[in-house]
Structures are given as C-alpha cells and as structure tokens.
Length: 412
Image (cartoon, rainbow, N blue to C red; front, side, top):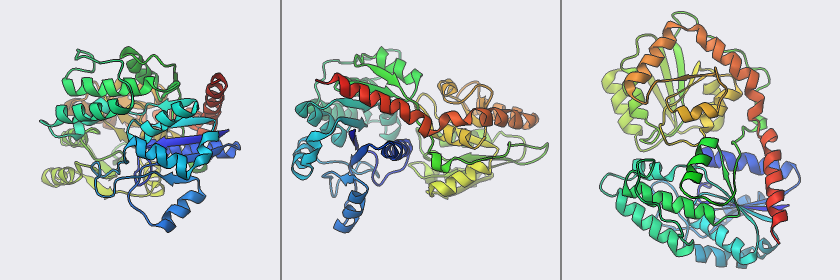
C-alpha cells in the first residue's frame, strides 16, 4: 500500500505522537509499504529538506515567524492542499491517508482525501480539552477555544455542538474543544484511539465514525534482550525517573509537593523541558529536594536512565489517553507510579503503584508505603518482565496493517 501520514506534531518536536509515527513508519516500511510523512516544521534549508525527502518526510508550507508556543504551525489548509497537488501529484495515487492531530496540516489531509476519494484514518491522540486548559493562561482559555473552534469550522463541518455538562465539558472552553475534536473525528472514515477509556469518551460525546482501539507500540530496535529484575533493598535509595514534559498538564509541581512529605531515601532524575521547567527547579532548590534536572535529552540517554531506575513516574490526571512513558518502562521491567486510574488499562495488573487520589498528600502516602515495603519493587518488576513483549510495535503493527487494508477495501 501507499500510505500518507499527516501530522502537525512531528518535525521539530518530541513526545508520544512523534514516537508513535516514527515506530509505525519504520515497521510499515519493513512490511513493504510506501510511507510518506507530511508535517508542519520550523524554517529549514533546502539541503535539510532534501535529506528529509530521502526518508519520504516532507515539510508542508509553515509559518516562518508565528509559532504556537514552541511548536511550529502550518499555513492555512487550502494552501497546503494546493501545495500537495502541485509538488506531490503522486499523492492522488495513494491508498490511505493516515492523519494524526487536528490542526492545519491534519485538516488539509482529511479535506484532500475527500476531494480525491481516498479513505482516511484519524488517530485521536490526546485530550485537547485538558491541554488547552493547562497551557493557555486563565482568562484567555475561553477566547482561545472559541478562536480554535471557529478556525476549525471553516474547513471541517461542525454538525455536532457540545454543550457544557458535568462530565468532561464542565466549562465553555472545554466544551468548545470537545466540539472541535468530535467533528474532526467524524470527518474521517475510521477513528483510532490508543485506549479503551478514550474510545468511550469520544463515543460519549458523539463520534459516530467507527472507532477502533490500537495501543501505541515500543520500537523493536530498542527492546533490551534480557533486562534484570528490579530490586530495592531495605534502606537503599529509591531511584525514580520522570521523562514526561515538565509542564502543568503533566503536574510536575504537585509531584514535587508530594516529595516534600516523603520519609526515606529517594532520588529523582527529571528529563525533558516545558512550561514549568524553571518553576520546578526553583521549587526543588527552595525545598532542598533530591531531584536532578537534565533538560531535553536524546532517547538513548532517557532510556538508559529508565533502565537504572526502580520506578517510572507519570502523575498527570484526566489528561493522558495512553502514556508512552508507561510502556517504555514496561519494556525494560521497571515498575510505574501514577494517580490516574485510567492508566491501569495500559500496563498489567500488579506492575504499578496507584495513589488513592491525584493530591500531593495521596502521592506521598503511596511513596512512603512503597519505601516501607521495598520488596514490592521486585514483585512489580517480575510482572512487567513477564508481559513486556506485548508492547512491541512489530506485534501491534500487524493490527494497524489489517485496519488500513480494511479501510482501503471499503472505499469504492
């Protein structure tokens, strides 16, 4: 098959979406498929663009001066559509458009597929309602949500309007973001969700397009052969690793507040950057916490740190739909700590520590209890190691291949 990926989150960025696209592209190509990736990106030289093109990665027309925070943004979808037809006329012969995200480049992919009668699969990666709430300063959230919704409705029909409710659209800004997400999903022929709990939320708010659950996978080339069982001896320092964004939606500050009440020896290595990076560093200095910040690092560096740890940390709440950090830990037998019960779906029972609530007090209680019962590290690690092969992308890519073939076959 000829498969075209479209994403506004790929070039010049890191994170779960990028990891997912890289792993899937590599494995689909191994199976003999032709895979193009079209993405928004920061300005780059002709030489750099040629190097990307050799890998079938192409930067769509993007804004040169205007960026969304630290992320590049695309030109208007209609400009991208015209560019695609002019620069890549071969796109007309592709079998499936595989879309990740819900902004300009992704919108262009869905719209062009409609015009060319090419089947589309839309991956709904994240909770944009919660992302907008955490990233945009208070006082601007509703305005920004209105503007994003308005822009999106220019290009994708909004046949469903989500009202405020007591479920997840509990304010006007979140209701607007759910309106955007639901209508975007319904514009595709099939929707993929990374977890069952997110599939249920999408269906609840009116996604009528068929929804399939396909968990993200871990790259085979990084999969360690025989990682040892993790073990924490009594009195030994509990080594923890944080490798999510250092930001409000990932709740770095509540986690640091929890550490203030941990009784015992611990050390936390923090990898990554984000909006709360300097605030978190100030908090650590002020409270004299045993936390070391490493900033942005390569995957090799991060993965090495994971393998040296006893416990992997993900304390977002009502935000993550999957949590790539969890399967990265599982791949090497490292137990995980989280406070969102939805994450129980991602890793096997008996391999994690779940705090009773998302509060710093509950997190500190759970960590203190673990320090009192260090043998649990070994017990959880053994469960991780027993189940870890299930997360390999090579196992999950066959499901994706089958889905893409089915969508292709249904299109006249």
